[in-house]
Amino acid sequence: MNKLEPGILMPVNYVRTIDGDTISFSITRTFNIRLRDIDVYELDTKLGKEAKDYVATLLRFAKDIKVFIPTNNPEKLMDFNSFERIVGDIYIDNVSLKSLLEEKGYNKDI
Image (cartoon, rainbow, N blue to C red; front, side, top):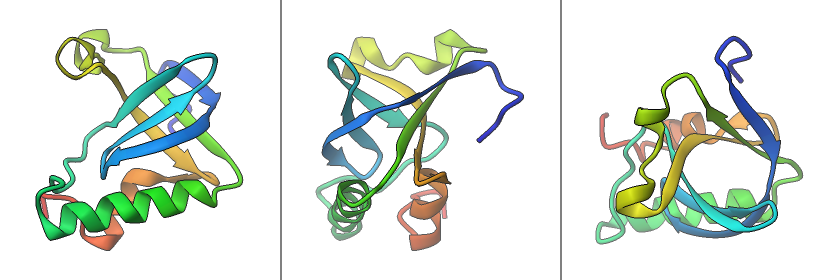
């Protein structure tokens, strides 16, 4: 986790996996987090379906889930108007979900 970057780090409750890089969590209400700096294959592809299942399994069995919402560039963070989600980082048992997805090859930028 980047401790130098301004932002908010909070524990969250897993609700459901929407696709490989968008997940619903709740604190006092449910909201969608879009993983920052990664683009996972879409659900209409084999890798997209695999990524969603992989993320759902990771989150279902996680002991600790945290979301980091950076506050240094609010204009880049909000994807809320078009997709009703917040852009941020997700940590599962202190490991970046982005790095786990990249290790599995689910990042379209590979």
